[in-house]
Figure 1 (cartoon, rainbow, N blue to C red):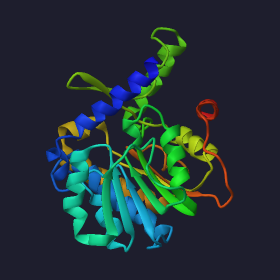
Figure 2: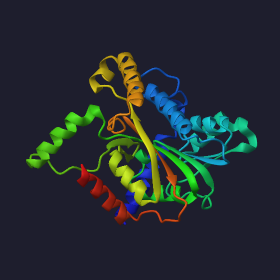
Figure 3: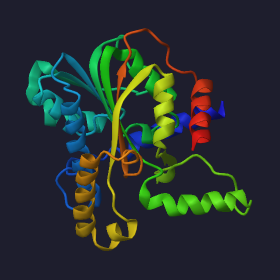
Figure 4: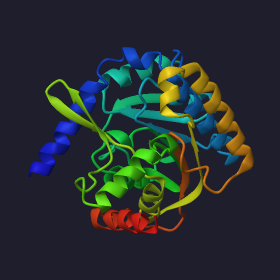
Length: 297
């Protein structure tokens, strides 16, 4: 009972958090570290689509569409796009930005954990930064599996909880917990007060997310991460941090190092729904995947 109330409060907090579209209208054009990273993330999603030769093949879903920047990308590539978001204000803004497509575009209010679409409706799903605002992953990932056609692609991005800038803090915390000097680790995330609600914004460990996707029936195709710059440099010299991050991101994509998809600020993974029918993982299976991934670390 308390869990249901908690989830409802989280959803209401997220809806209110995105009810003011003003900060999100210019996220791809402003100066600063976060707008820079938003633009970088968009570039690398495009790169993944090109790498996997994802061309217009019919219907695409922009899940958590925000102001519709990715919807515009999909429309420009010839997809028939359905955009959805839990915030009505974001949906209205997406319609303004992508409404030029007429019959090739629609935007609706929808819950990522209970999508109002028939099974196997889409050939491509983009889920950009959405999981951070959900209490758990398995229901939304299960819904994405359900509405994605066999052989279809899902590109998903999350904030990386083991990014290089956080490693010293994470290692120190692990040592202190081992010595029982601090309490056991709680789920990764930051609490944000939104009016009378507390919203949790989560980050993810790439290996654990990969395990959940695999148990849900997805086949991993490729992954990458981006955003390599020290936190102190970001705060003190944001322009320098942007140049450094762009240079390192570009170099890593050329080097193809085995660890390079694990430690950037954002983790981007592309998966495909297998042609054979499988059920999305249950909450118990997701917990096993998480524990298994953690054990491998």
